[in-house]
Image 1 (cartoon, rainbow, N blue to C red):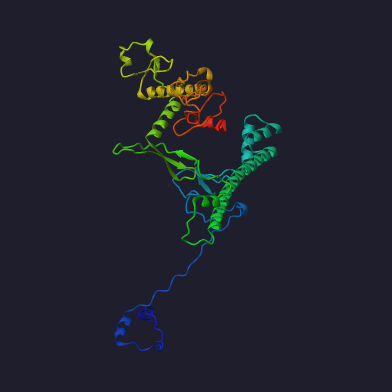
Image 2: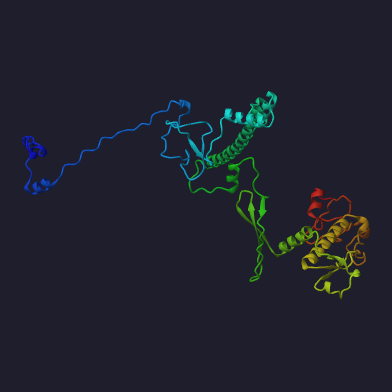
Amino acid sequence: MTASSQTSPVAPPPEPPAQLVPLPEAFRATAATMTPPAAPAPTTSVVAPVSPDVPDRLRARAPEPDGPECFTCGTDQSLLYPDPRGRRYDSGAAVLYCGTHVPDAPPVQAAAKVMNAAMENGSATPCELAQAEHDAGILFDPQGAQDIADSARIQAYLEFADELGSLRQDVAALSHFKAQLDGIRSALAGRPDNDLVFVREVLAAADPKAPFGAPLPVTWDGIVMGPSGDTDGENTLVPLTTSHGGPAALVLDTEQRLALGGWLLAHAHTGCPTPGCGIDAATVDEADPTMWGWILVQVAGTDTPARWYCTPWCASGAITAAGAELAAADQADAVDPDEQAPAPAAPAAEDDPEAPADAVDSESHCVRCGCTDSRACPGGCHWVANRRDVPLCSACATPAELAVSGGAL
């Protein structure tokens, strides 16, 4: 045997050529230069052996990491602590946690730590150890657990009751709206599309039990649109909102606006926080610089002395209040015979030849205007009964007095 025969293996006999489908000439050169793909390497699965020292209940059902890391977040840059429950990987390595994700210890281990700490502090009797566990909250307290359960049940009941009440209100509101819609549809059923319907018909169909028409419940929007003064006879608009959220407006002419302003001054202006506002003029010196710009008010016909007021608002309020008092006094005097001014003298009999001889003594005179049966007010009038039983004609009587009288004398 030669050296050449030792280094050169004997070549196997050539295999018969495979039967191939003839390729076009253009693909033969490319196919000749192509190399067959390499065969994939066989895959091997490596399974770590299970340590017999790891009980099945303590096995971590997760692959073991390559190095120490937190079981929850995977960090390896902080201190790691073993699982308080004693869990281990299949290899027997302890499951580790960082300080943020360390789970709570099981009750047995917690109780053992509490008992150990109590024994180190001198506790030796069973009662002392049990008391230490009770103080740590480890011992089961049936009454405490029942109280917690009862409290949770009551809280849940109250929450469900509130939710149920809210749902009932929603159902009631939806039912009311549905009844209104059904009523309007019933009232419009059978009418042509060009039919005219009165507002009162729609309101009555929407809610037959609710009153409709005047007076209209409204809320003031806090805005008053006064006249601009560009033209004569401008009205004042007071924007309002109805109880159903619709827009409305109170339209006032000049007389009504002044009457409303006076009423507001008399009722809304109840006092001024400025010291000295409304002080008697006799008690202050007009030359005092602190009184400059103030307004002196004295209402004729009243016993109130002259007083100083700090602003036009306060002065107007005082004037309006005094006017309201005078009007109330005049109205009270109109029905009080002891407070009446003497009636105007009747014309002498000789001046009126057509008057009967006893006309001056027999005729009654209205306590306010002096009219009589033979000399009535322009447009006519009649006597009105009143509580004081004094002569009072219908032209001078107030609406309240007319309502009380119930008719004429």
